[in-house]
Image (cartoon, rainbow, N blue to C red):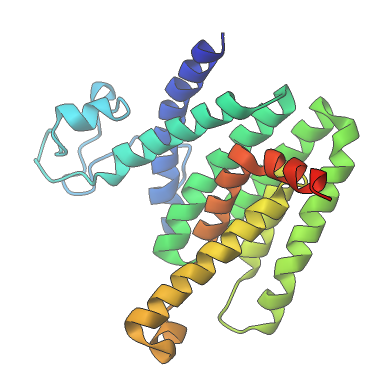
Length: 251
């Protein structure tokens, strides 16, 4: 049963990944993500339905538009494939329905957040706010007794990042604070693992940049923190609760 569930999640994740590509391209440009057919950005021909099958159409077209032969970025099938893998991961590790639903909500939000933050250095409220609302409603509906822990986790994680966001100019932004709160609403206490992983990963990259460019140049380099939070979130989904359980048993 579990292998079938994982396969179903992966297949549905491919479809969602195709939509997330639309979100990543349109949302930063102020274009509606729910209306209007997808088109080639070079020749503006509408993409045919049979050319819009996740991953497979890109492979069959060899990464080029059918009409003008302009190259199509490999990012599109990669986003679809990564989304499928993340949905499959959630299906594989979830211990309950609420874990599965909140995990799906989280990874679906993290994919476009990561790409938009990498490219535009901002995390859209149009993603974090709906994700927070959906997570809150789903948590209350499926596991009302666990909602206080998730709310406390969200508030604590947001407060932890709010301090550097408020005090350090050019550092973390409020978008990062809102994103970590969404992680808290979806993960509960394992958000602590996500936060730790994000901080360690960001620090490692900072050290590498300092070693390559020098400390002064590294300080001038603008690095979005959203992708590190997203990475931490995925790690927390996979092993967050077991790590917390192991830590508590050690004391």
